[in-house]
Length: 296
Ligand SMILES: NC(=O)c1ccc[n+]([C@@H]2O[C@H](COP(=O)([O-])OP(=O)(O)OC[C@H]3O[C@@H](n4cnc5c(N)ncnc54)[C@H](OP(=O)(O)O)[C@@H]3O)[C@@H](O)[C@H]2O)c1
Image (cartoon, rainbow, N blue to C red; front, side):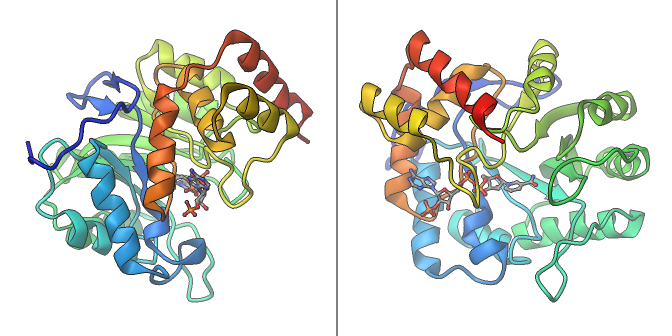
């Protein structure tokens, strides 16, 4: 172990079935290693490099990324900051979209686009194999009802070739998960979920029963930060920040939830880690459970 490594409470561990990966429950989301709306270079490359190094120094052992962040920017910064990677670090990436020159996010789900995306990730991260690749489906505003069969079969082939160790799904419906899990082993699902956006409550419980990880994206609301008087009041009553309460609520929601909040600030990173030290009382949970019902 690196002598500078710190042992921070990251909320215990979780091992999805079919893997030997012992994930700390708090990881890191790398989208802010690229510029605003995941386009171009970050405002301060040195600062975000320090954030990702600090995350790993504090014991984070999974980082969510994609080669389409930038594009190519987040992965190259991860490599520059961390290579050679610690042996226990899982880098989790996504394929299924690409960036248009106008900063759009067209789907990239053809056989060749998926193969190219896996190779882009391997090359820019300097890896021989990717720990987990999430197949990102659906649109900007959530899942669609397309079949997962064709694109998922391509990833299953790449897994057989040894380029991908494990497969996950992202931005999918419960029905798409059911379809996908008949095609290949799914070890994690990464969907939009937080205190105010709880469409996946049933899916989370199903995945927990099957020992599959659920990794919420936008855990703090993403581009539209969570904002609620109830959240403010609970945060005040437990002596924490609203972000810490939102993350602690996710940790307490289900043991299969892994966090990948994104930040470009070391201060925010440390604040987010403290969510693991916060035990929300039942009364606070009941109040927070009301936020989703009140959100249009
Ligand atoms: N599968 C998908 O389709 C998909 C989509 C979006 C994101 N993702 C993944 O999910 C991860 C998380 O999503 P996200 O980063 O977009 O949204 P998020 O984690 O909900 O929120 C990130 C925002 O919150 C701010 N923040 C973080 N910690 C804070 C703190 N302690 N206090 C105040 N502000 C704080 C960050 O700003 P600062 O930089 O100022 O801290 C940033 O603007 C991403 O990094 C990415 O890896 C996946």
